[in-house]
Structure formats: structure tokens, C-alpha cells
Length: 143
Image (cartoon, rainbow, N blue to C red; front, side):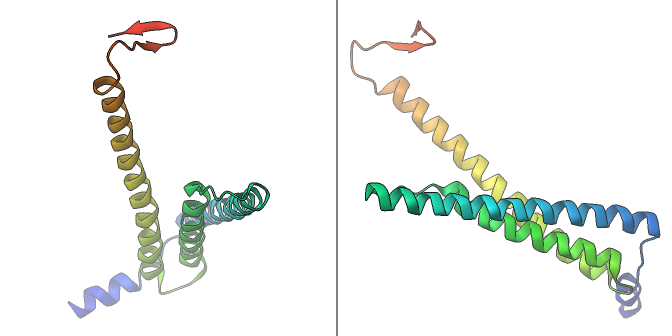
């Protein structure tokens, strides 16, 4: 058992594999950096709007982009370490995959939340509208 763990930790990717992993790592770091730039700009815009209007309106997209950016940059760095180091490819790969798991878990949670909100809004519009009101979609009455 100990030999299996030692062999797995010592696994080395070949040059072509390392090149592809490094390309993924660089792309993830660029996406992460752009997400953080977007987040900083969005948060600054929220602050500026609050200062001018004296009303605090919170946009969750830049706040979520902070997490996405941090995880993408960290995962990208781990993928780059897979290509750059010797003897720890699997350790770095598992760290990078963990960061990807966080990113996709966040996306899945946001998709479920968006679906639930859509169903809730559709239910309210369809079942709880005032008597005599018409539901119009693109100029055509519905229901």
C-alpha cells in the first residue's frame, strides 16, 4: 500500500502532457486575473454609486467573481506546478482539481438558485395575478 502511494506521488507526465497542462494553467490564471479585475471594478462601481446616490445596491456578481478569480488563479498555479516540478505531479494535480471542483460547485449552486427563482417568479405571475388582469408576452395575451 505504501509503495502504491509512493509510486502515485512520483508519477511524471511526459513533455507533451506537461505542455498541455501548463497551457491550461496559464489560461486559468488569465481567467482568474480577469475575474478579479471585473470584481474590483464592480465593487468600486457599487461603492461609487452608493456614495453618489446615498443608496447601497449590492450586486452579487462581482462578489462571486472574487471567489471564482481566486480559485481559478490558485488552480492555474497548481496546474503550472505540475508541469514545472518533478516528483509531485499527482499532488499538484489533485490540488488543482480541488480548485476546479470549487468553481463548478459554485456554478452548480448558482444555476439551481437561478432555476428556483425563475420557477418562483413564474408561479407568482401565473397563479397570483389580480383578477381581470391579462398576462401579455411579446404583445400577445397568454392564458
